[in-house]
Image (tube, rainbow, N blue to C red; front, side, top):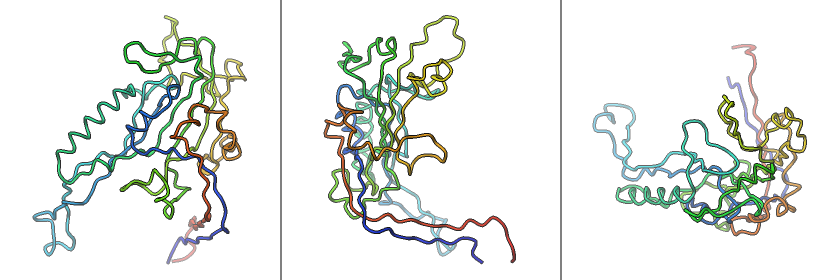
Amino acid sequence: MSDSSNMTSNRSSEQEEVVVFDESDPIAAIESLPPTVLPVSMKLELGKTTAGDKVHETLSTPEYPVDVRVPKGRYIPASTIHFDNPAERPPRNTKAWRPERFCEKLSELLEELEDFSHIDTSRIYLNGISVVELPPRYTTTDRETGQTVSTPRLYKDEGEMTLAYFRREGGLTATRVRDDLDTAMPGQSLSPPQLVQIKEVSAKPARSSRDTQQPAGRHKYYTEEEAARTNKSDSIPAVWKLRRVASPGESIRPLTPVLDEIDEFVPALSESELFQPTEFKGQTKQREQFYAEEVLSR
């Protein structure tokens, strides 16, 4: 007896407008960001290959019904990197990387891996990235590193900043057109990283009191709860998000209707080559699945 069934239905041909993050190499992605756009976090991985795998000496057929294979290639599992940035702190006990140091050490790591067989370092790719764009008046250049950093005035003025979130999202499958996308490199997944959320926030003053006992929170901007608690309604974050990635009951504004005006949210990022508004033509497939809740008979 089957307790579930799947049905797939297709809508007629339609168009889908998205914004693609047009760089899949993690290092190139960081190095290509405009000066006033700083990385917040990144998801990457270096997929493993089965080339060179061997059958286990004893755990194999015909003694057993199946073979156990021993992998030879090295790989990097899906990993999240957090950067030193003006919008968010990393989770506790997690290192915040300076962008230039991240690029340096990842390049060094990939060079080390090239000495091993059965590994293709070109298979490393970006699964997602979040960035924050600052108004130029709140940025300056670090004298030691030459990198763009935020100024203390950003927090003193409770200035505005905009976060943009890109990720490979299962709701968009570009299998049939991947050769037409710059992000479709060998070994990569089928969907390009796309813009899924924009968040406009207000910086909050730095915690400087010696009487403060609680550790600083992750956000360097007002959350909805903090803005409500301090009676700063103008500082409540404004969130635009793709409906298909929003949680049930989540209070958001739909992202798709404002894509034509996205340069007003992230002007510097919009002018970069990383930011590629793209329009697809295709079909939306819907799958229905039956979830059993009670056994009536057996």
